Length: 161
Ligand code: COA
Image 1 (cartoon, rainbow, N blue to C red):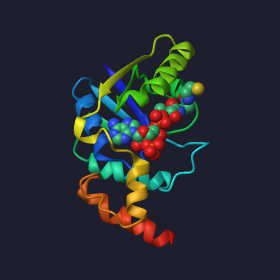
Image 2 (cartoon, helix red, strand yellow):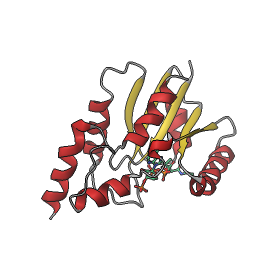
Image 3 (cartoon, rainbow, N blue to C red):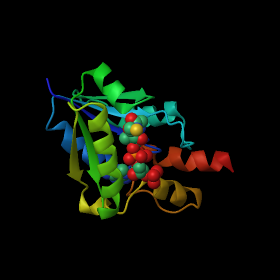
Image 4 (cartoon, rainbow, N blue to C red):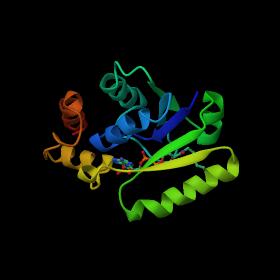
């Protein structure tokens, strides 16, 4: 069984992430969307909120599971019997950092492969921080994230005021 892993902060999940999730789930038997409990980044959305958004959006997709994780990705992958990390590349600027991460992970566990997918051209400008920034100032995020989370994203920023 080919188990792939798509790790990230998903603070919040965007249509760019979903495009990668969709395509990745077609080339493996099981895709784990791994939501990072991050020590260095302070997320706007709690772990529970980030996981709930993904769970709702991905409901009814039998080969996709959403699981929070902390610690090293390679350790989590071993526990989950995952062989391959999927990452999306949006622009050349992503390359250097992703290349370093892939090599670090390879160094920690040579059996792990990292596969890069080119992000859909329509989403190459998109990031979670762009969504957060727009939402905080009341900008339009409707084409950037799934419909079912739009209002909850706006509500979060209103409640933080
Ligand atoms: N579409 C839209 N946005 C995308 C995207 C896509 N396809 N792919 C990435 N992004 C954006 C994210 O939205 C995020 O945006 P932001 O910084 O503006 O909020 C940004 O790219 C970074 O993504 P993020 O989800 O924070 O992931 P990351 O690339 O920083 O890596 C892990 C996260 C989980 C892979 C990494 O931190 C990790 O493995 N941590 C565990 C510890 C470890 O093992 N470290 C490595 C060995 S030392």
